[in-house]
Image (tube, rainbow, N blue to C red; front, top):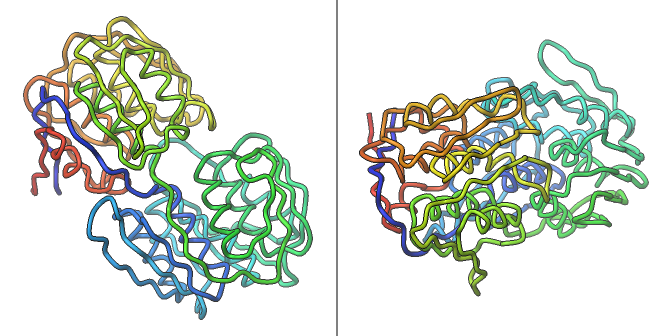
Length: 426
């Protein structure tokens, strides 16, 4: 199993291209099931999770062709042809690899009228129940039941429009209801819908496929069902979590990095925090530039929240930054209840963090020290890489398959801006 080796203390200078968003690409791939015509996606990131979703779609009979891009900035091009589906069964072995696989449920049910999908897996960062997904489908007239760890759904007469109000914001449930509603009879209204950019990106792709959606980008989506969707070509949005991670890298290591393709609006909450912490942030014609002039980072408090609040997927990374900040900070995790698993590993590097329930109290130290550490989930793993960039000596991060699920050629991107980082086969 590979590991990532980082020798800290190197300033970062240059530019980093931002890849297509994992959390958008996976849902867009699932949306290909809604039409018998080919869907072509460009700017697709080269990730383990993308490969896993492609494998799942192939198990349904979807034709998947991938044209490798000539550069990281360009990304790959993927064409998905669901014209002849041979199965609506998503096995445990497929779905356990990542939670996003569950997003095939809505499209299969809407187009085929049935589906049997395993309860999801993915990172072990909390229960993340699927009741909101299922309640939405029931409201649209589907029969839904659990059977030996599988969700079984049927709607032989087709789905019907409904007014669905989510009790709390859920990206996944919004996407399930949204995709199902595109082919439902009548009008569906989604209240308290997720506003994340990835949901907006999915809406734009569905619209290009012929869906009728109003309120895109808001918490109130209105979908007028159509008899069928058609093929389209869509460019995957840039990954805001990757952009935010590299922005933090520039601050924690020092230096100046231009994030080519980044959309500042997508990570506005983070950029505000970084500026308060002492960084210089400026928009550029190609994206965003983040610089740190050598002064020590100033401690800042963080509370995660649904978009446009501070993203839970950047919580571990900003905590790594706060471990070397001047002063003390409070990090509250309000989205997932088990997302502090990186804390014991940061402690191995000299971080001073105390956890009480959903809150971490971080006392900044002047320096971290390199150590062998172990990744516990996708975002936690990259927080350890960030800590390694500033730590004295050598840091070795194990279980890097977590990194490969969500960061497109991370060591290559960081090494090109001056980091001493390498993948070590074992």
